[in-house]
Image 1 (tube, one colour):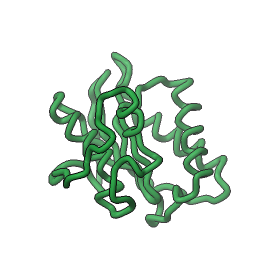
Image 2 (tube, helix red, strand yellow; image 1 turned 60 degrees about the vertical axis):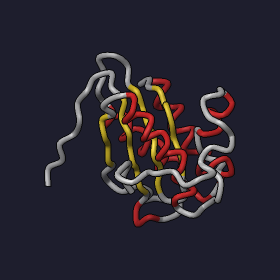
Image 3 (cartoon, rainbow, N blue to C red; image 1 turned 90 degrees about the horizontal axis):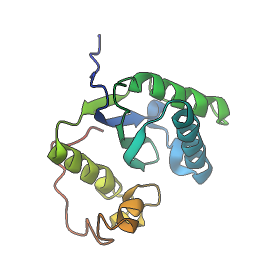
Image 4 (tube, rainbow, N blue to C red; image 1 turned 90 degrees about the vertical axis):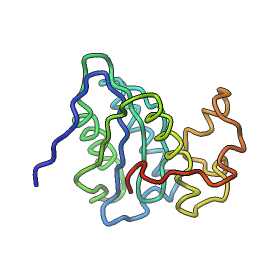
Length: 163
């Protein structure tokens, strides 16, 4: 099967990236730290904004905005996965592919941010969004973009995102 990737220079994209065999690679804090290091290393050479992110034991979701005129998220993911794999204590970390979605407008962007931040509750990992440590939700709260008790009620994420 040939995948057709989105091409939107300077666009914002939602991604789902999954570990091989859904192994809980990121259940250990040191693996999450290593993933953060891989993002930093790649962003240093190929900048992009991480608008929202959540790292769960066996997958992650994030939104990136690429620099104007740049649409090469594929190379960035390749570099992040390679960097992490080279520095990890184990091999065969990632599924070969990832899923992306071009965010069409502000509403689509906001819906996917909500999906990302609510994901640990959706998967039963915590009962409150604020309790999941590996999420940009904490940054949103610090910057006043979101209340700390957001997501206390059920958040409707039907039809958004991808597992």
